[in-house]
Image (cartoon, rainbow, N blue to C red; front, side, top):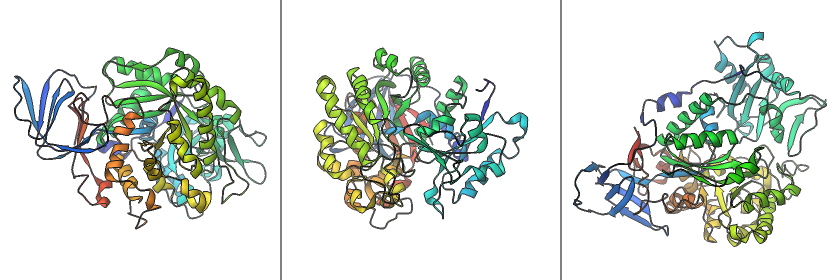
Length: 567
């Protein structure tokens, strides 16, 4: 094991440096005044999802007391008038699935996103450590972390191996996350420290990938990742502070006023609660406890948590069904079309599902179950139905996180059982270059099927899965509406029949995301009695060409009517 003096090397990326040139507050807003916002080109949704427009909004102590067109001058002293100069206003955007502290960490690590080959990715690692006096024997306790590689973007589309890293940096343990977070690429030093050898057996729900001679290649998939990641020193309190600060600044600059944190440890839960109790959270967090945490039972016994200012809510658990499509870890009913002996991986064994579901739902917590492949989705739906029979008092608003590839005949069960599909639009545009290779054309009929879910009456909670995808919600809005990538490809959209309208996309990132966190009574739209969480943007979301939605910029972000980001 490692001593407390061991370090994880990090570095700022250019994007963070840029963000820090903007204006942020250091803590949550102080509520003590009345503000009349005027001359807005405002849009919001009512509780039924209908689009409303407004020019004026009156706010008292952070809560909306009146909203509409030309409200006039309220008969009240000490009122502050804020002229929005006809700028477009939207409700604060809610990301229903992200990883907050992991985002803060990746903003300081090697950025491998967009690398065009294994060699280029390896070279980026070398550039990262260049000039830092690393590689010497006395420096081998420093871990090098990185994120974002995707072999599907490389010419050979082959998974990377330890050889390219060993050649360049043999002395320091290196851990590089695949873009989906379901595989890591490590060097021999990391394998050595973890005790992974030719004789090591893959753990249940994971794979130690080996070559023809039986040697580990340096690729660890799903549960096999923990063989290495569990020995990396845990972040200190100061590191958690830094990660939260960077993530907060980044998300606020993108118009995210609330984020659902998909799977936190007890250490992070206690850290978040401490920040909330001291009014030090800068945006709203709906945190899901990690079902894999060894303290999960005691955390369930602690019950729900909500601070007075409603900045932190803890009443849900994130559980893990399978892996991801890109690393062929998503659990499928039939084998992969491009790997006929492979059915994917169940990260949680099927026989463990009853106790898992019963413990969480029986404790009156929301269960948010990660399921990407059609088999994982089917197993989850079947177990939800069985557990609801035991605990009928807690049988609504549970979620399937991702719901990417679902058997067509299983989609109606989401509506029947009241299960919310929490989906990420940019996953579709990121995966479209390989999804058909993985599952074939027939199974795509139930893949990334947003409009199909909406037509049957399901409410979809949209998000990004940051830092797997970029956190910018306008990328997600654009992908949901156009089914196109950043280059507006394909021309007519990928499986365009599943695209959504602008109102439906906005609802997924606001009202329905709030609903999926039991928070629609106070956030998700701009209505009387709700929090004045809103954003000011540089273009009219409802009038610009669809191709421009992705590039909309946030000029200001308000929480409780206070500016927490101004460009």
